[in-house]
Length: 373
Length: 147
Image (cartoon, rainbow over all chains, first blue to last red):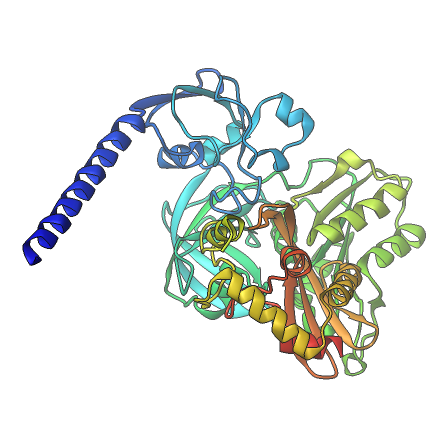
């Protein structure tokens, strides 16, 4: 009785093992795309990579980093590239992130396209300058109850070239239930002259993977990875009055921009910097802003509290930052001169500020921002 | 479980739609989580439709803070933040902006976090998320917030 049972289970085991082997062999044959070539910008760069992986990761392996705020999970829509060869129709996972025009031009999410054959793509030339850096956290300090300033020394490569206002992606390792490294975008608050470091301002987002890591686990001396620089947010070289608006960690690019302008002696421009917070405990860098005002006669820093507390003893502006911006555009700012808008903050704040600026005839094409949190 | 629920539970695992997933430390199957939470809500006298209406209202009022915390009706402090991109519903019936609302019910000091997606999961699928999920709509906390 026992022998037939043992024979039967051995037979089942053998069949299962054989099927597993067949599946493994079939997988290797069917999914083996061999080497495929990537032609970038009509022959400007030609690469050979192993087929089968998403375009985003294949490009990263050869040192070309397309921006991605979600690490290739298809949830941010940032990793767009224009594909000029046939890679099949758009996937349902891509369409929600693409405009009608982008779809017609065959713009694709590089994290969703698997490289199964040779491909031709077009990407901004600036992406060739993006590098992945290994760095060491030299200093972490609290600038408010929910914002940390993280100062990272670059180890390999040791220097970064960027325009004040641009951002990097900070990668944190897996922790708790998070099984994979995760990347998020943060503007650099250090000036470009500090080529060996990047400084970031990280505001704690409840439930946020990277911000929670930075606020609860990151230690001085720790090794981190940053990739960049990315972004189109930088000062345009005109003489127009700069209307700058930020809230929270949106302070970061402006700290970099203003210090860069001071260092380069570009203090001829009129700058109005509006910073919104709820209470006094949400304000920071006030001394640094005062210092800028003393060095730069046409620089004005206007902090506004939306809900000042009785013990704040606040004598400054109150209300939402959009209301304060509107008040100054009505009463203080010379609107006969050309104006440009520079914004950094929550997408809701950006939309509200853009509406105010348009109302006061700031040309929409001269309102600059990077819309990420 | 139905094939739809099985597929939704697969989509809720860490790394599929979000890194942390939707189930937290919960080892129960999706049908059990939904059924048991529905029973708890009923015992607490919480009507899902009415509670959803209040949460939608808090989300909309919170948006007026433009990213900073704002006091709503003198008893809530609400901060609405938004990250780039969208998240798909694990039940595959829509995509949602990565908008989070952190609500503090001032009289009780109860902290309550929800997102556009977690509100949809609550309202349409009666899924409050697994125990230990950061965006779980905890029935006891919800009761305090609605009080």
